[in-house]
Length: 275
Image (cartoon, rainbow, N blue to C red; front, side, top):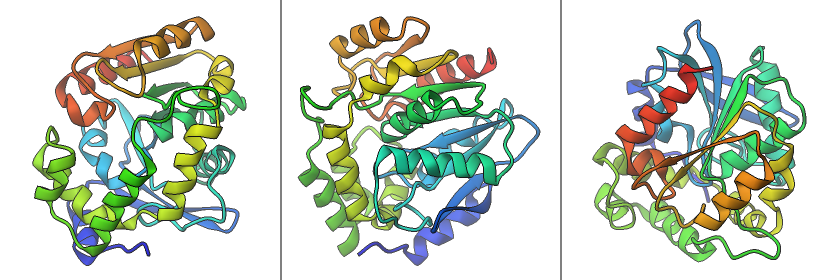
């Protein structure tokens, strides 16, 4: 059973953003809107990352853009859904864009979020550009996603029984302490059914079916040591979408912004600064 802890809600008091709500069909979606007059940047997190877990990145971009971080359905304060396909997630993203009246926003997606951003862009939704960060390249006829469903569900079980930053650190030792603490408090807000369905999608929905249709301007930002975007995956991505720019974050694993905060943030700022 998913749950939002009282201690997790208290974290929102320290976040320099306004909580907003939009509706996608019968699903109520929560977003963190950092405001400002910049170009809107809709941020789509990964499979077990509620919006607040990307606060450390969003607050460092407010001089360049207006970050709007989405609690993807089944995570954070957003409702659970009846299904969790890439098309469902893409519909939700369009609902956020339309519901908030965003004019040609930028899209930034990490992991699962990168796959969602690719589908939205490939639909021809008016965007200024997309940044896809370490998208899962697993799929039919390809290797499995490196993290098993059992590992994800085990972490959810830890969160549901009560976990802390020290336990989180055993799985994510490179993360800053605040990010370990946030994950400990917010992971229980993730719906196990959503995680299981999304993980299954990593095996059944092929990123490379969508990737060649993602229009410029788009950047694929990937961890130099990521097991998700391998050297072979980088080569295939470059060949499949020649108009895209591919940028490596040296030393980073799949959790690019958490593993190498300063380098990843600098590279992202350079990308956004040119747009």
